[in-house]
Length: 313
Ligand SMILES: [Zn+2]
Image 1: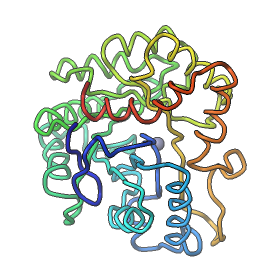
Image 2 (image 1 turned 90 degrees about the vertical axis):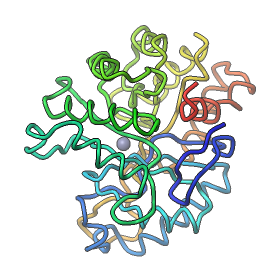
Image 3 (image 1 turned 135 degrees about the vertical axis):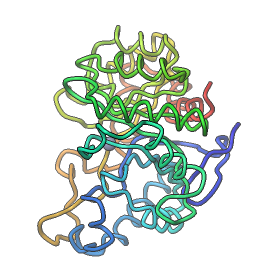
C-alpha cells in the first residue's frame, strides 16, 4: 500500500479498484479547451460527467489520464469531472511527441524541474499534483529530443518515486532502447510501464520486457492494425505465461477531442467503440472468458497490475 496523487488529493493504492491505466478525458491543442471549449462539442463537461458516472456505475473506479501538456492537459477539467462522477483520476506530467525545437538545447535537469514541480507542488498554479510521469518514442526509435525527455523523466522519478509510463512502438521493439536509457539513468525497470504493447503480437518481446521487471500497458482497444480479438489472444498468452500481475489493460480512449463542428455527441472512435470505457468489461473480458480465462484471473485484471505498478512491486 502506498499513497499516490489523484487529482482530488492523495489516494491509497488499496483504493484504486478497477483501474484503466491509459485513457484521455480530453485531447486538443494546448490551451484550446480553456479558451475555446465550444470546439469540443456542445455541453462537453456535462457529457463527460455523464459518461464517467455510467462508467463508475459499471465498476470503473479509477482512470489514469495520460494527457500531457502538449496534448492539451487541463487539470481543472479533470478535477471537475472526477468530483462530479466519483471516478478517481490520476493526472500525468511529462511529454508526448510534440517536442518544441528548443528541447535539443535544454538540459534534462531543467525539464526534470518542471516535472517535479507538477508532482510535488501542483500543475499550472493549481494544487493538483501529477501521479505518473509520461514519455514517448515512436516509429524510428528514440530521437535526440526524446532522449533528453527520457533522462528528465528518470531524474524526476528519482526525486519523487512517481512511476514512468512510456508511449512506445512495440513493432520496432523501441522499448529496448527506451529501457536502456532509463536504466543507465538509474531507474529500476519495475517502475516502468510500456504502453501500447498490444500493438504487437510478438509475445517473446513482451515477455522479455516483463522479465526485466517492466509492466505492460495493453492499452489499445479496439486499436488499429492488430484486430482487437488478436490483441486479446496475445493478452491470454501473457496471462498463461504467468504475468497477469504485470498487465495493465486499457483503451487509450479519447472521451472528448477537438471537433470541427459543434455536434452533440460525436466522439472519436464512436463507430469502432460504442462502449467507450466499458469496452474492456463488455467485449474483452467476455472474449477472454470464451477462450478459457478463469474467473479468478478476470477478477485480478485491471486491479492487481495497476496496483502493483503504482506500488513498484
Ligand atoms: Zn494515449
